[in-house]
Amino acid sequence: MAVLLQATGLKKHFPLKRGLFGKSQVVHAVDGVDFEVAEGETLGLVGESGSGKSTIGQMVVRLLQPTSGTILYRGRDIAHLSPAEALEFTREVQIVFQDPYSSLNPHKTVGQTLARPFRIHGAARNGAEIQARILDVLRDVGLNEAFIGRYPHEMSGGERQRVCIARAIALRPKLVVADEAVSSLDVSIRAQLLNLLKDLQRKYSLAYLFITHDLATLRSVAHRVAVLYLGKLMEIGTTEDVIRRPSHPYTRALLASVPIPDPVAARKRTASELGGSIPSPVEPPPGCRFHTRCPEARDVCRTDEPALRAFGAQRAACIPDVVERLRAE
Image (cartoon, rainbow, N blue to C red; front, side, top):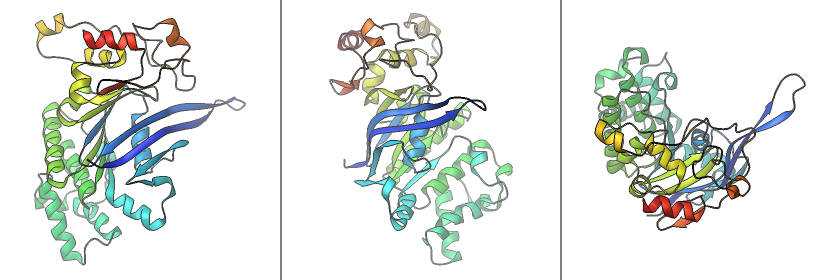
């Protein structure tokens, strides 16, 4: 498959000033990340809060500008698009946020919300055609024409998120960033929306950058997984490889924290040794970012930042002997 989106050396630092005479500091939200998304593929970005995954999503859709590094979409640097290219980019790359209520204008009906993309991009010739396109996209997300006149407060959380998805796919984009798009919903509704996203991917050959803190969610939707910690990429590989044979202690800890319904299997599962909390991104630890919480940490981890090395089909930022032992277990 052809590469649709490619990020290289991606960094985002936010200046921070504390107090009236406080020293200027920098939040290292994203600190040198490489990844790519192929046409029709789902790449999952997973990590704890503060790992930088939502910041990456916002840079991909041009809501934030990178401090350094590049994001290429179809080979073009999205930081240097002409006005016409930028308009076309917004047609082809869309985002769905976590909270559907705050993402929708409470004073606009569903019909008014869904009409806006068609009007901005001149994607329909008249009001009748816009209406027909709205009905089509509502059917795509499992809603009927009765929703056209409804306001956000008249719908459930799942229905509101379906409207947000409808707005995102209205112009048939190539890439959709799903930023914790199902995490705020009940489990049954979450499963329905995950199935909907997969159905839409098959129907329209969509690519997804799927952002979540839950590895279990990615198991059913992602082709590949990138694991982030404190602005750094810890591991990347196919979903099956990452979940079955994690190559980084942090990935293993994330997997161990996922609840499983079988109490017998849960007791047999190796407990996570991950303790403490994620360090401040203002003063990230030297060496490996994860060494302050890592049960496998060595002296070298405290001083030298590990490179992202290939281990079979996976890549991991960890010392080789630890990776090989984890993969052998």
